[in-house]
Image (cartoon, rainbow, N blue to C red; front, top):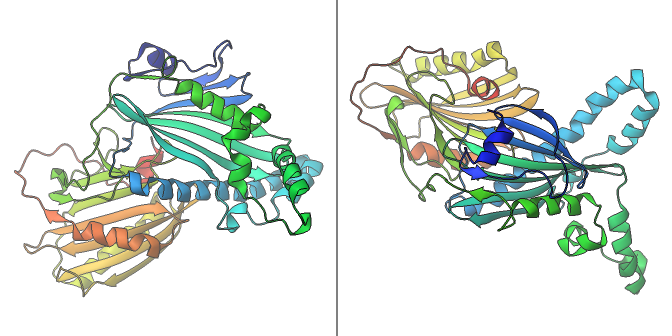
Length: 423
């Protein structure tokens, strides 16, 4: 059944009317898990996606949610800015005039080079009994004559999560900022010395009525319609929220950990993996995870750190044979940790043309069993920024006694990015 029909019938645990009231939904593309349409009233492209990955909106994540999404929004913004250079190179042969115009916009550092400027406009959790909805509003591009604004609602489902998006592209930009600046300049004693009021002033929803066709105004109207308590989306069923600091048991990996906020276990049906490997993912602004935790009970045994380090390097460098590019591995013996035989690794690489980082801890337990704990995240985030989180994750690891059970037919151990992008 197509996703549009499943949403109207409430078969996913939520019922929603996607089109703006009084307009006809102009469907562009659809399937069982995706839907794309054009909303002529909003001048926006709408998208719905039923992702198989779980979404955590529990109270445990609330303190870190804004910062996590802020970092992801910056990475998305900077990737879009960099991608324009590749697109412009192709245009130089087919449309040199347009390529020249694009160069004038993007041959400069992205706005995120200024740490005080943020592509994230709004981020909030909205209570919608019996569930909770994540509402975000952000910019993907923001240059004169080229502005992409995306508004999203994301909500957990019994299986995976639902993501509703509205994207508005503006070719004429700056009129909102210019019009709002006029009274400020007129009131200033010295207009030349007037301090910039900041982007949040121009983006404030109190100005939307004055600029009804602006991208922010249009996208906000669409999100408000979906969240209307009477005519908006109806949450019929939702999974229980994760308890704060809950320990998660991973029997396949004979381990238990306390994951950072936002990470939820992913079953084998969603991410096929080696029989003794367990994964948890964190969902942000995209249907696919922005970060991933793997815990793996190895079949190999190692008597000393030398053999473990050699195995670690060989395994990690082997990722280049599975589609990763520019793989750089640094491993060192961890002599100051809780395990007598342990190795720390860090990996930089590119997957699907995006930079990625991974922190890895390999160790041998008291009875000789070997394990690996890893945390993969965006390459836009420095290793040192994630190291405290990773160290806390490793420190939380405990051995889990499990009864031997018949194992299913083993699947080849696939690197986390290949499992993600195959979905």
